[in-house]
Amino acid sequence: MKYDVKNIQLAKEGQLRIEWAAQSMPVLNRIRQRFAKEQPFAGVKLAACLHVTTETAALMQTLKAGGASIALCASNPLSTQDDAAASLVKHDRIPVFAIKGEDHKTYYAHINAVLDTRPHFTMDDGADLVSILHSERQALVANVRGGTEETTTGIIRLRSMAADGVLKYPIIAVNDARTKHFFDNRYGTGQSTIDGFIRATNRLIAGTRFVVCGYGWCGRGIAMRARGMGANVIVTEIDPLPALEAVMDGFTVLPIAEAAPIGDFFCTVTGNINVIRKEHFRVMKDGAIVANSGHFNVELDLPGLAALSKSRRRIRTFVEEFVLKNGHRINVLGEGRLINLAAAEGHPSSVMDMSFANQALSIEYMVKLKKPLAKDVYPVPEAIDQQIAREKLAAMGVVIDQLTAEQKKYLASWELGT
Image 1 (tube, rainbow, N blue to C red):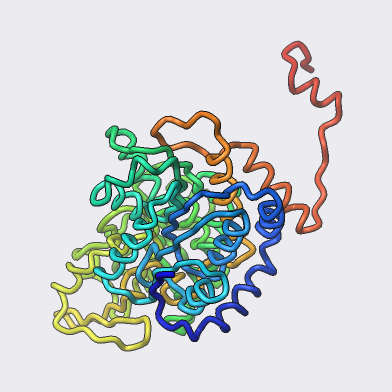
Image 2 (image 1 turned 120 degrees about the horizontal axis):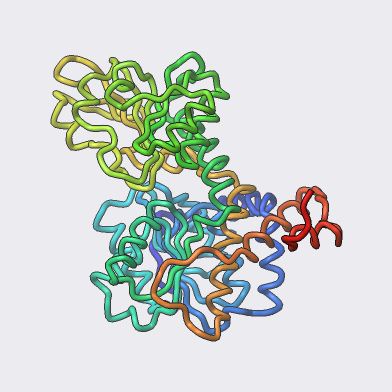
């Protein structure tokens, strides 16, 4: 079996951490038990480009239990947990190609290694796998029947491909499931991003000005958690609707040009490019701390920051200090990559339980389709979303009401009124 991980001797430690994560993933555990009996993926080859974490390991184990042949690579050079990668190789016999801190060349070599397995389905987190498949590995596309995408950033790319008529197979937008973005994006990103800031810097959040660039579901979560830590939160936005929502939620809303000189912490989470640019770095306070929790590091204009700087050095494990020509120090966390995975451990497993349940059930849905879908981006079927929510509530011991026959009739009728 081919694989490429940092150190296979980390497998035992990884196995214990995967077991710990699985204890908080009851929905995925139930799905795994069913998959083991029904074998829905017998003969199916899956290529996954995801953050290689203990939670992802639980998903890989679930898919393999259902009969799938899987190969896994990292969807970000800094997001791999090397012990989890080693455990998947040694204890689960799953080919993994992922090393925390891998360079650009290795990152894409790993994606190609996964594609060498000639998959029938893809699982992506940012659409890099799909992008390479559609550009450099087009000969393999005819073999692919469908896929899933986990992130807002990836879905933006895929919808653009579909609109241009170049998407060559159907993909389910897992990110858009309510049991994904309501919880994973808001509570998972919110908590793990703040965790990443604290682990990287050991700085106090309370009493500072914390600037959140973007007020989507991830931005909402970060703003909520930063405020909970005692920060004065400033939100920047380009869309009037989430900007208005941020105001109504009690946050200060400013253009980034006005927030840049007064912020202490900055976090981009937009899915766009060059959100914080040279003109913003130039006016930041001495000692400002800047990070990104969007999928790609392009949200920060790091080449522009380097051009403004007279020196740079790594002052802590995940902190690079840029000294501007005016003497101000700007501290960039985790190379501008996903700070919640670069410096912390990513989302808590109880949140990823729902996200990865969506992945598993969406792939099963596509495998079982008698008629293939058109080449487009599709929502997670409502029945899957509802099923996951019900199972999560049951696992938490929460019981909810059911509609009475009278209520069902009322909701289905136009004749009944006041």
